[in-house]
Amino acid sequence: MADPMRIRAQAAGDKATVRVLMAHEMEGGQRKDASGKIVPAWYIQEVTATHNGKPVLTAEWGPAVSKNPFLQFVVKGAKAGDKVGVSWKDNRGDTRTDEATVS
Amino acid sequence: MRMTKTLVVASLVAVASSAVWAQKSAAVQSIEEYRAMLQDGNPADLFEAKGEGLWAQKRGPKNASLEQCDLGKGPGVFKGAFVELPRYFADTGRVQDLESRLLTCMETLQGLNAAEIAKTPFGKGEQNNMTALATWIAAESKGMKFNLPQAHVKEKTFYEVGKRLFFQRGGPHDFSCASCHGENDKRIRLQDLPNLTKNPGDGVGVAAWPAYRVSNGQMWGMQQRLNDCYRQQRFPYPGFGSDATIALGVYLAVNSQGSASVAPAIKR
Image (cartoon, rainbow over the protein chains, first blue to last red):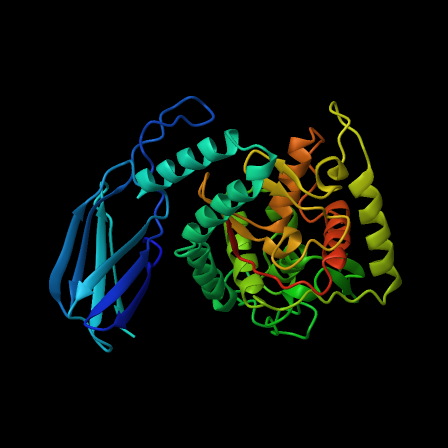
């Protein structure tokens, strides 16, 4: 089970800024371990975000994204009290979904 | 995202390499801009959240949480504990820093094998939990000023021992801690080297650890920080939670007395 994300969403005017911190190894698949064996690739491939259940962002990520990635985006029309959900799926099929309330 | 970071670093390198003395302030300013950009979204938050969970989670052979752990301010008190460590603990008869104290609690309360955990390399198994716990407890003292007790004779002894260790030269490079951290305004590449023989100020030196290292994606506690300093000096690795590392911790933290802790910080 993957560790939880940290999502902060703050409304300002007619939009809200969402900051997401994801806990993931994001192993690129090029590194070798101490015994010389390739460390298998393990990274987030799909990221989706929803605003009150309605999709507002989808992204395709690859091995070049850093470990424990940070994502920031703006949702138009989001106001305090709204729900923002973020989920990711990695190349092993593991997924994680977390939700936050806009403040 | 990584692209942006790389570009920023590349431009910083260009600034730094062309820097003559007069331009130094511009270079320093750019470094600070880069650091400010990293501040938002410090992955240390993830370790903090994990540590908070671990504190209350029933674990180990005794199936107990750490909620009764005495970090120096009474059982279960974690707010403000970090800025008063290392300190003397009567129950163990030792001066202990945050990590060695947590180790004691993990053994006495949870029944985990402290010797085994101390031998585990950083970043593996139970050491990951240790780092997360240390991160969270340090974060609970964020903004507070270092205020170490120095009344007990052992606490004073540890300060003196730490001071000697700080200036002790040795190893194939004939290095001491003071070789890099004994003067003002020193720098290795983009890293400012604080002068740790006196108070380096708020959030510098000991007041910035535990910290997240962006370059290797690792969260480091003070024990690992000191361990890596010894690696860079080509000394043998000190034991985890050993008296030598704690003595150095006392020396550094007492020198920082009155400075505010910003831990968990984020480093390049």
